Length: 227
Image (cartoon, helix red, strand yellow):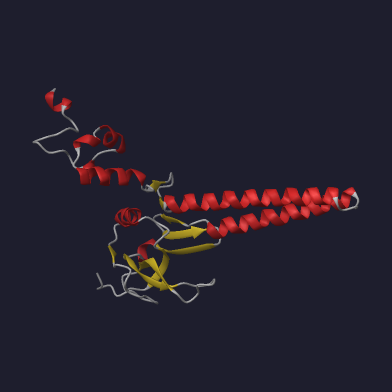
């Protein structure tokens, strides 16, 4: 009975490691942990968790901070688009002496234009999601999709790759590089898209090492001996 009463509490004068406890128990026993463990435990509760899907695959959501930023930008953009469309509607009614069919057509065209623009903005800003199953590893967003066979993945390397497209084309971008045993690069994703601890958990679940410090520049192959 005494053992049950002290489960999860101090044992031998020392608290259990926070990593071995559930989030529910962490909240109840936070005061029992040293200051650094309290900080780490609270941080772990804010991380985007690894999601286990019903089909057995794993999913790593993007950094919650980036998701919140995208939502704020999207909300502001949608609000501006709605206000602009209402102004266009008022102008078409108050100032343009045109027939109602033509007026409705103008409003419909404006609605389609603003709606399409908002979708493109959302698709461009929406961060990708990492998924892995028994067959492949995928980094997918609305406008792009990278994949590599799960059997080919041997390590995740923190390095720099050349960014393609856009105004920043040709710049070296800090990225997580998914490489095969011979160092051949299979795919990559930006380092700011996912939390460091989230990527570490993802690598552990895939049972592959994660190396590098974002200092090395990588083109086609990663040096497997680099740490």
